[in-house]
Amino acid sequence: MFGKKGLLCCAIACSAVLIVGCDEKEELVEDTSVIEEQTIPATAEVELPYVTPFTGEKIADEITTRPIIATINNHPAARPQSGIGSADVIYEMLAEGNVTRLLALFQSEIPDNIGPIRSARDYFIEIADGLDAFYIAHGYSPEAQTMLTNGVVDNINGMQYDGSIFKRSSDRVAPHNSYIAGENIETAAEKVNASLLYQKKVSYTFYEPDEHAKIGVQANSVSVKYSNYDSFNSLYTYDADTNTYSRQCADEITTDYLTNEPIALSNVLFFEMNHSIIDNAGRRSIDITSGGTAYVFQEGLMREVRWENIDGVLKAVEEDGSEVKLVPGHTWIHFVPTNPGIAASVTYS
Image (cartoon, rainbow, N blue to C red; front, side):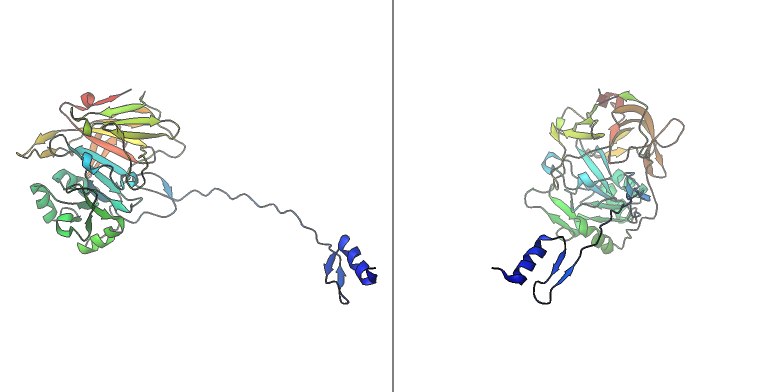
Protein backbone atom coordinates (compact mmCIF):
# COMPACT_ATOMS: atom_id res chain seq x y z
CA MET A 1 0.00 0.00 0.00
CA PHE A 2 2.74 2.48 0.89
CA GLY A 3 5.28 1.18 -1.63
CA LYS A 4 9.00 0.61 -0.94
CA LYS A 5 9.83 4.29 -0.65
CA GLY A 6 7.00 4.93 1.79
CA LEU A 7 7.96 1.96 3.94
CA LEU A 8 11.57 3.07 3.99
CA CYS A 9 10.67 6.54 5.21
CA CYS A 10 8.46 5.13 7.95
CA ALA A 11 11.16 2.79 9.12
CA ILE A 12 13.77 5.51 9.18
CA ALA A 13 11.45 7.86 11.07
CA CYS A 14 11.28 5.33 13.89
CA SER A 15 15.02 4.55 14.02
CA ALA A 16 17.77 6.33 15.94
CA VAL A 17 19.30 8.14 12.96
CA LEU A 18 19.15 11.60 11.50
CA ILE A 19 16.91 12.02 8.47
CA VAL A 20 18.22 14.29 5.77
CA GLY A 21 15.45 14.49 3.22
CA CYS A 22 13.12 11.63 2.29
CA ASP A 23 13.31 11.36 -1.46
CA GLU A 24 15.46 9.75 -4.10
CA LYS A 25 18.52 11.73 -2.93
CA GLU A 26 17.95 11.31 0.78
CA GLU A 27 20.84 10.24 2.96
CA LEU A 28 20.89 8.55 6.32
CA VAL A 29 23.41 10.05 8.71
CA GLU A 30 24.00 8.28 11.96
CA ASP A 31 24.04 10.62 14.98
CA THR A 32 27.26 9.75 16.76
CA SER A 33 27.77 13.14 18.51
CA VAL A 34 28.26 13.08 22.24
CA ILE A 35 27.40 16.04 24.47
CA GLU A 36 29.97 16.36 27.18
CA GLU A 37 29.28 18.12 30.47
CA GLN A 38 31.40 21.17 31.00
CA THR A 39 32.28 22.48 34.43
CA ILE A 40 31.98 26.27 34.50
CA PRO A 41 34.14 27.72 37.24
CA ALA A 42 32.29 29.88 39.78
CA THR A 43 32.95 33.57 39.33
CA ALA A 44 35.24 34.78 42.06
CA GLU A 45 33.85 37.64 44.10
CA VAL A 46 35.76 40.76 43.13
CA GLU A 47 36.27 43.37 45.84
CA LEU A 48 35.38 46.81 44.57
CA PRO A 49 38.47 49.01 44.68
CA TYR A 50 37.10 52.38 45.85
CA VAL A 51 35.20 53.69 48.87
CA THR A 52 32.74 56.58 48.91
CA PRO A 53 34.17 59.35 51.13
CA PHE A 54 31.02 60.05 53.17
CA THR A 55 29.15 56.73 53.18
CA GLY A 56 32.08 54.30 53.28
CA GLU A 57 30.50 52.03 50.66
CA LYS A 58 32.55 50.05 48.13
CA ILE A 59 32.22 51.21 44.52
CA ALA A 60 33.76 50.36 41.16
CA ASP A 61 34.78 53.86 40.07
CA GLU A 62 36.65 56.54 41.96
CA ILE A 63 34.69 59.59 43.13
CA THR A 64 35.82 62.63 41.13
CA THR A 65 33.04 65.14 41.93
CA ARG A 66 33.40 67.43 44.95
CA PRO A 67 30.70 67.38 47.63
CA ILE A 68 27.51 69.31 46.88
CA ILE A 69 25.78 70.90 49.89
CA ALA A 70 22.27 72.35 49.73
CA THR A 71 20.24 74.17 52.36
CA ILE A 72 16.98 72.22 52.60
CA ASN A 73 13.79 73.69 54.02
CA ASN A 74 12.53 71.72 57.04
CA HIS A 75 9.29 73.62 57.68
CA PRO A 76 6.26 71.29 57.89
CA ALA A 77 4.94 72.93 54.68
CA ALA A 78 8.12 71.80 52.90
CA ARG A 79 7.82 68.11 53.78
CA PRO A 80 8.41 65.55 52.49
CA GLN A 81 11.58 66.91 50.93
CA SER A 82 13.01 65.77 47.61
CA GLY A 83 16.36 64.02 47.40
CA ILE A 84 17.12 63.63 51.12
CA GLY A 85 17.19 59.84 50.84
CA SER A 86 20.18 60.19 48.50
CA ALA A 87 22.16 62.50 50.79
CA ASP A 88 25.36 60.97 52.16
CA VAL A 89 25.11 63.17 55.25
CA ILE A 90 22.43 65.49 56.61
CA TYR A 91 23.22 68.13 59.22
CA GLU A 92 20.23 69.48 61.12
CA MET A 93 20.43 72.70 63.14
CA LEU A 94 18.44 75.65 64.36
CA ALA A 95 17.92 78.77 62.26
CA GLU A 96 15.56 81.41 63.68
CA GLY A 97 13.37 80.60 66.64
CA ASN A 98 12.91 76.87 67.15
CA VAL A 99 12.82 76.09 63.43
CA THR A 100 15.51 73.75 62.12
CA ARG A 101 17.01 73.60 58.67
CA LEU A 102 18.92 70.85 56.94
CA LEU A 103 22.23 70.88 55.14
CA ALA A 104 22.24 67.93 52.77
CA LEU A 105 25.59 66.67 51.47
CA PHE A 106 25.48 64.86 48.12
CA GLN A 107 28.41 63.12 46.51
CA SER A 108 27.97 59.38 46.00
CA GLU A 109 24.57 60.00 44.37
CA ILE A 110 22.95 63.11 42.90
CA PRO A 111 19.12 62.83 42.94
CA ASP A 112 16.88 64.02 40.12
CA ASN A 113 15.55 66.91 42.21
CA ILE A 114 16.66 68.61 45.43
CA GLY A 115 14.59 70.81 47.70
CA PRO A 116 12.79 72.81 48.73
CA ILE A 117 15.92 74.99 48.78
CA ARG A 118 16.12 77.62 51.51
CA SER A 119 18.38 80.52 52.46
CA ALA A 120 21.98 80.60 53.66
CA ARG A 121 23.36 81.34 57.12
CA ASP A 122 26.97 82.09 57.98
CA TYR A 123 27.50 78.75 59.78
CA PHE A 124 26.03 76.87 56.80
CA ILE A 125 28.68 78.49 54.63
CA GLU A 126 31.45 77.66 57.12
CA ILE A 127 30.46 73.99 57.00
CA ALA A 128 30.40 73.99 53.19
CA ASP A 129 33.78 75.73 53.10
CA GLY A 130 35.39 73.19 55.42
CA LEU A 131 34.20 70.38 53.16
CA ASP A 132 35.25 72.25 50.00
CA ALA A 133 31.68 71.79 48.82
CA PHE A 134 29.78 73.57 46.06
CA TYR A 135 27.05 75.31 48.03
CA ILE A 136 23.41 75.71 46.93
CA ALA A 137 20.93 78.05 48.66
CA HIS A 138 18.03 80.38 47.87
CA GLY A 139 18.38 83.60 49.83
CA TYR A 140 20.70 84.62 52.67
CA SER A 141 21.04 86.44 55.96
CA PRO A 142 23.04 89.71 55.87
CA GLU A 143 26.15 87.94 57.22
CA ALA A 144 25.78 85.09 54.76
CA GLN A 145 25.29 87.48 51.82
CA THR A 146 28.57 89.20 52.65
CA MET A 147 30.40 85.87 52.84
CA LEU A 148 28.96 84.65 49.54
CA THR A 149 29.69 87.95 47.81
CA ASN A 150 33.29 87.73 49.03
CA GLY A 151 33.63 84.23 47.55
CA VAL A 152 34.19 82.34 50.81
CA VAL A 153 32.76 79.27 49.08
CA ASP A 154 31.83 78.40 45.50
CA ASN A 155 28.06 78.72 45.34
CA ILE A 156 24.92 79.40 43.38
CA ASN A 157 21.92 81.18 44.83
CA GLY A 158 18.28 81.23 43.80
CA MET A 159 18.11 84.98 44.35
CA GLN A 160 20.02 85.42 41.10
CA TYR A 161 18.74 82.37 39.21
CA ASP A 162 15.10 81.99 40.26
CA GLY A 163 13.13 80.61 37.31
CA SER A 164 16.20 79.41 35.43
CA ILE A 165 18.60 77.20 37.42
CA PHE A 166 16.03 77.09 40.25
CA LYS A 167 12.42 76.11 39.52
CA ARG A 168 9.27 76.74 41.52
CA SER A 169 6.88 73.89 42.24
CA SER A 170 3.23 74.69 41.61
CA ASP A 171 1.94 72.40 44.37
CA ARG A 172 3.54 74.38 47.23
CA VAL A 173 3.67 78.05 48.14
CA ALA A 174 6.76 80.23 48.50
CA PRO A 175 9.16 80.08 50.26
CA HIS A 176 8.58 76.33 50.40
CA ASN A 177 8.69 75.59 46.67
CA SER A 178 12.15 76.32 45.23
CA TYR A 179 14.01 73.33 43.74
CA ILE A 180 17.12 72.58 41.75
CA ALA A 181 17.31 69.60 39.41
CA GLY A 182 20.30 67.32 39.76
CA GLU A 183 21.08 67.74 36.09
CA ASN A 184 21.28 71.52 36.57
CA ILE A 185 24.13 71.41 39.09
CA GLU A 186 26.82 71.16 36.42
CA THR A 187 25.24 74.08 34.56
CA ALA A 188 25.07 76.00 37.85
CA ALA A 189 28.79 75.52 38.45
CA GLU A 190 29.55 76.71 34.92
CA LYS A 191 27.42 79.82 35.45
CA VAL A 192 29.55 80.89 38.42
CA ASN A 193 32.88 79.61 36.99
CA ALA A 194 33.25 76.96 39.71
CA SER A 195 34.99 73.62 39.36
CA LEU A 196 33.20 70.46 40.45
CA LEU A 197 36.41 68.45 40.76
CA TYR A 198 37.00 66.67 44.07
CA GLN A 199 40.29 68.25 45.13
CA LYS A 200 40.40 68.59 48.93
CA LYS A 201 39.68 64.85 49.39
CA VAL A 202 37.76 65.25 52.64
CA SER A 203 36.23 62.04 54.02
CA TYR A 204 35.00 60.25 57.14
CA THR A 205 36.45 57.09 58.68
CA PHE A 206 34.45 53.83 58.46
CA TYR A 207 34.36 50.30 59.78
CA GLU A 208 35.45 47.58 57.38
CA PRO A 209 32.59 45.32 56.15
CA ASP A 210 33.47 42.59 58.68
CA GLU A 211 33.81 45.02 61.61
CA HIS A 212 31.06 46.07 64.01
CA ALA A 213 30.50 48.67 66.69
CA LYS A 214 31.10 46.90 70.01
CA ILE A 215 31.26 49.66 72.61
CA GLY A 216 28.24 51.37 74.12
CA VAL A 217 24.97 50.87 75.92
CA GLN A 218 21.94 49.32 74.27
CA ALA A 219 19.76 52.00 72.69
CA ASN A 220 17.11 50.96 70.18
CA SER A 221 15.47 54.37 70.05
CA VAL A 222 16.66 57.94 70.49
CA SER A 223 14.83 61.25 70.42
CA VAL A 224 15.99 64.84 70.26
CA LYS A 225 13.95 67.77 71.53
CA TYR A 226 14.56 71.30 70.29
CA SER A 227 11.49 72.83 71.93
CA ASN A 228 7.99 72.13 73.15
CA TYR A 229 6.89 72.66 69.55
CA ASP A 230 6.86 69.06 68.29
CA SER A 231 7.22 69.90 64.59
CA PHE A 232 11.02 69.98 64.88
CA ASN A 233 11.60 67.19 67.41
CA SER A 234 12.74 63.83 66.05
CA LEU A 235 12.67 60.16 66.97
CA TYR A 236 15.03 57.51 65.58
CA THR A 237 14.27 53.79 65.83
CA TYR A 238 16.80 51.03 65.22
CA ASP A 239 15.93 48.00 63.07
CA ALA A 240 18.29 45.09 63.75
CA ASP A 241 17.23 43.30 60.55
CA THR A 242 18.45 46.13 58.32
CA ASN A 243 21.01 47.55 60.75
CA THR A 244 19.58 51.02 60.09
CA TYR A 245 17.55 53.71 61.86
CA SER A 246 14.27 55.14 60.64
CA ARG A 247 13.34 58.73 61.48
CA GLN A 248 10.12 60.33 62.63
CA CYS A 249 9.42 64.03 62.94
CA ALA A 250 6.14 65.35 64.33
CA ASP A 251 4.95 61.72 64.52
CA GLU A 252 5.43 61.17 60.77
CA ILE A 253 7.99 58.87 59.18
CA THR A 254 10.60 60.86 57.26
CA THR A 255 10.45 59.88 53.59
CA ASP A 256 11.95 61.09 50.34
CA TYR A 257 9.30 62.70 48.13
CA LEU A 258 11.00 61.36 44.99
CA THR A 259 10.76 57.70 46.02
CA ASN A 260 8.13 57.76 48.77
CA GLU A 261 10.54 55.50 50.67
CA PRO A 262 11.52 56.02 54.31
CA ILE A 263 15.09 57.17 54.77
CA ALA A 264 17.48 54.62 56.30
CA LEU A 265 20.41 55.79 58.43
CA SER A 266 23.45 53.86 59.59
CA ASN A 267 24.62 56.52 62.04
CA VAL A 268 22.88 59.21 64.10
CA LEU A 269 25.13 61.76 65.83
CA PHE A 270 24.55 64.68 68.21
CA PHE A 271 27.05 67.52 68.66
CA GLU A 272 26.64 69.96 71.54
CA MET A 273 27.45 73.56 70.51
CA ASN A 274 27.16 77.05 71.92
CA HIS A 275 24.22 78.96 70.36
CA SER A 276 23.51 82.68 70.73
CA ILE A 277 20.95 85.13 69.29
CA ILE A 278 22.58 87.90 67.25
CA ASP A 279 19.74 90.15 66.00
CA ASN A 280 16.11 91.16 66.43
CA ALA A 281 15.04 88.67 63.79
CA GLY A 282 16.20 85.85 66.05
CA ARG A 283 19.10 84.81 63.85
CA ARG A 284 21.76 82.76 65.58
CA SER A 285 25.46 82.31 65.86
CA ILE A 286 26.55 78.70 66.34
CA ASP A 287 30.06 77.87 67.50
CA ILE A 288 31.21 75.13 65.13
CA THR A 289 34.91 75.44 65.97
CA SER A 290 35.42 74.86 69.72
CA GLY A 291 34.42 71.20 69.97
CA GLY A 292 32.37 69.60 72.71
CA THR A 293 30.33 66.63 73.88
CA ALA A 294 28.94 64.25 71.26
CA TYR A 295 26.70 61.19 71.25
CA VAL A 296 27.03 58.45 68.63
CA PHE A 297 24.24 55.96 67.84
CA GLN A 298 25.07 53.01 65.60
CA GLU A 299 24.06 49.33 65.42
CA GLY A 300 21.65 49.78 68.32
CA LEU A 301 24.37 51.08 70.64
CA MET A 302 24.97 54.54 72.12
CA ARG A 303 28.16 56.03 73.48
CA GLU A 304 29.45 59.43 74.47
CA VAL A 305 32.49 60.85 72.68
CA ARG A 306 33.54 64.33 71.58
CA TRP A 307 33.34 66.32 68.40
CA GLU A 308 36.09 68.48 66.95
CA ASN A 309 36.57 70.80 64.03
CA ILE A 310 39.48 69.21 62.17
CA ASP A 311 40.72 71.45 59.36
CA GLY A 312 37.22 72.84 58.94
CA VAL A 313 35.48 69.45 59.02
CA LEU A 314 33.25 68.47 61.97
CA LYS A 315 34.01 64.94 63.18
CA ALA A 316 33.34 62.74 66.18
CA VAL A 317 36.57 61.75 67.91
CA GLU A 318 37.67 59.19 70.48
CA GLU A 319 39.41 59.90 73.79
CA ASP A 320 42.78 59.38 72.14
CA GLY A 321 41.96 61.89 69.39
CA SER A 322 41.38 59.32 66.64
CA GLU A 323 38.28 59.63 64.49
CA VAL A 324 35.19 57.68 65.48
CA LYS A 325 34.51 54.98 62.91
CA LEU A 326 31.11 55.17 61.25
CA VAL A 327 29.05 52.26 59.98
CA PRO A 328 28.96 52.37 56.16
CA GLY A 329 25.77 54.05 54.98
CA HIS A 330 23.98 57.35 55.49
CA THR A 331 24.47 59.63 58.50
CA TRP A 332 22.31 62.28 60.21
CA ILE A 333 24.03 64.82 62.49
CA HIS A 334 22.17 67.13 64.89
CA PHE A 335 23.61 70.32 66.35
CA VAL A 336 22.23 70.67 69.88
CA PRO A 337 22.43 73.92 71.92
CA THR A 338 24.68 73.82 74.98
CA ASN A 339 21.77 75.32 76.89
CA PRO A 340 19.82 73.22 77.91
CA GLY A 341 22.53 70.82 76.78
CA ILE A 342 22.84 67.53 74.96
CA ALA A 343 22.05 65.41 78.03
CA ALA A 344 18.75 67.25 78.52
CA SER A 345 17.83 67.34 74.82
CA VAL A 346 18.61 63.75 73.79
CA THR A 347 16.93 60.73 75.37
CA TYR A 348 17.32 57.06 74.46
CA SER A 349 16.12 53.65 75.52
